[in-house]
Length: 296
Image (cartoon, rainbow, N blue to C red; front, side, top):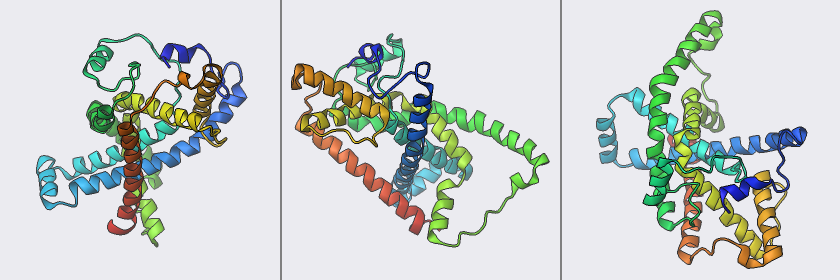
């Protein structure tokens, strides 16, 4: 479904804030906790990725320390990266295909579409190659946001907190209470350097999600079409935007038959998506293990 068609009307249960403000607010209240929980899971996945890539193999660790000798910068990359990955996880949960956005192709859109870089305005089906390359492209696109966050926003934020601490000394309490249990230590490590992780989340809202948006949109449609083909209804606890897309596809199928379904994914794509899902779940689990057991 093209972006133009998506913006023509809002399928149930989506509403415009100007027409039904209370329903709109209720939907935001419902989706926010789910987004935060999934964002935290994404941060765990980032912990696992960082540990597996840069902490397991001594050679990789040495190269990483040689390439980035500054301890503060290395830790900032890790923390902002956790916020970035967590933000991308959370945005997928709340992805709204029907959100109003520009339909005009910019020069960058045209370049990306020509090079087969994932782009939300490209109506061609998502490919296995794009799925595999997307994580690397998302990190590459996030670099400008990271540089702005680390070299401009973070110093400004610390300056504001320093001024505030002159009036509120408690804000600068240096030592946190020692974790008394594994759960306490886990929570402490997950929320450590929260300011940098929040900046990483902001980075995910900047260029970091440019490539990811196409993946969000295609993955959502894939899940919706799979449920429609199977005849399964959509659970009520699913996000409103997901329910809306299901209702739109379901209505099209009821009117035109299964031919209304846009994508007939190949076996390779189905296996690739299944594999990606298992990898994501595995990384979340291993990230939790790293924080709860390995990190001291």
